[in-house]
Structure formats: C-alpha cells, structure tokens
Length: 407
View (spheres, rainbow, N blue to C red):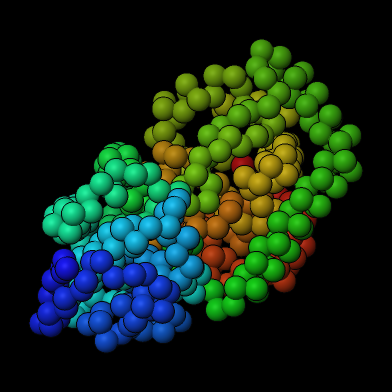
C-alpha cells in the first residue's frame, strides 16, 4: 500500500493515497485538528480579509488569498468522479496548508462552502513555489497524469493583492494571464478588488439587494429613454448643427466594476478635434488629480456648454444602464488613463457598478477637488443601499437645475 507523508505545524501526517473518497472523510481531512492553524468562523474570516486588504494599502506588502472548495465535490471541477482526482486534490490542498505560518489566516467560507487561506506577505513568486511543490508531491504519488486533464472549473481560486499604484499593479496582468494559461485550469488567478471582500452577512439579502437595484436600473432607464425621446432627438440635432463634421454620439472607453472596460456613450459637446488639443491645454488643468477639468474649455462649442450645464450630454448613458455596464446611482466611470494614476484607496470606488450620479455629483460636482470626490465615492461603496439611491436620485434633479460645478 502506498502512503504519502506531510509535515504540518511540527506534526507528521501520513495519508493513504489509495483510500476511498467520501464527503465525511473529506470533512475530517480538513478539520481544524488537521489544519494546524486556528480555523476562524466565516464572518470573522471576512473581517480579517478586509483588514489585510486595508493594511496592504498602507504598507504595500502583498498577500495571496486562496479559496479551497470542500463541499459538493462536483463544484471543484472534475468532469468525472474518480478517486485519483480526489487524491491529487488532497495532496494539493495539504501542500498549501503546510505553507501556512502562524501569522497567516485560515477560515471558513460561506459561498461556496469551504476554506479560505490568507498567505500574508506573499506574492506571485510564493504562488509559483507552491505550484512547483504541488507538482513534486503529486508526482511522488504517481498522479501526475491528473494534471494534464482539463477541469470544468478551477480547483483553486486564488487572488493576489499588492496595494500598489494602479499603473504598477497592471504590470501583473500579463504575468497572471500566463500563469493561468500554463496551469490548464488547475488555478484561477486574478487580482483582488475591494468588491470581492465586502462583508455579506446574509446571502438572500445580498441577492435581493442586487435584484432590486438592477430592476430599478432597467425600469428607470427604459422609461427614461421612452419619455425623454423628444429631448434625445433635440440634443442630437443640436450636436449635428453645431459641428456637422463629427458624429452625434461620442464613444469613449471607460473603466467599470472591478476594472472591466466598456464603451460609454455621450452626446458630443466638443469640436471634433478635442482629443488632439487636450495635450496643449494640459497646463490649464484645474483638477487636483489625474482628471482633466477646465471651466472655459475652448474645445467646447457654444451649445455644448448648455448640454453640459444641464447634464443633457449624459442622457445616452441610459443605454449603458439598460445594457448593464452602468447603474443609475454609482461612482462616475473613469478613463483608463485616470485609473492608472490611482492610489490603492482610490481603487475602492471601482468595486461597484459605475453610475450616472452619486454623492459628489449632488454636492458640488466638478467644484469638489479630486481627493474629495474619491472619498465621497468610497462613502457610497461602504454605505450604499436602495434608500440612499432614491435620495441621491431626488437630489440629482435639484443639482442639475442649479448647475453648480457643471463644466
């Protein structure tokens, strides 16, 4: 009979790689007694994950976050049940657990059921070392052929968070893509966003909140398109007569939830050569951050100032809301060039779906400095609910008619 030995927290564990799999034995295998570290309840583990995220924002010491599925074995991803798959999976899990230090955090997950492991002060090099150890251990057990078979879903869901400025963080994207490609679905590696760790105490309430918000977005955007169709047509004619050379709709790539790019629509309020003239006007930028704002921007044609003053140029974004790229209420979607300059705490605003209006749009709009805008957007991320959304929508109508800070 073949055995495989591991050392975990100064204890030797010898496991028969030919034993039969049952969910009960798997549960015993991953019991707190066999893990070594204290296994925290789900709510406490989520709180620790959030604390580690915020700590990394301050000191830029990266960490790895593993999700290990332990319930309902089919979720793990194997297309066909076979004890050899289970043995390889157990070896891989034990390899991760043997790498945990007393400062690392292990806890239960709510959705999906399983274990979460936070490897503090660990980066992609640590993950690569873990991958190689898994390979060596699985080879010793004579199960290396298992790794060549494509799984339905990744065995390990791993997130990395560095706490770096976004343009430096984006340098990891290519390395992450290469890592995923060469691991044949065994790992799913991605960057961690604040939205991935927002505390969710009740699954039903979370789903209900998302359903209500999305339903409100669909209904309100559809009704808005229908009721405002005469205004939309009038705005389109204004654009066409003001600058016949260019298109009526201005399309621009923006950054959405968790860094996803999408095309945002606006009525064009500037002359057709606006983008090419931006560089020469950069010295007149009145924004305190990476955004560009100029009260008397010469690139805006006369009627364009009217469109901007009453936010009529934003009306085509009702179609973005209908498509699901945006929401009625949420932080405004930034440009990729702006996001590249974001500090770690700025990126928290990307954890929710961007919207037409939010706190800083009803509090002074462009008159609020960049840092103030970021703080107000993060306030929405932390405290948003449907009641607050309705309040912000009501305040938006007042802010639009007052037109303070609109330029």
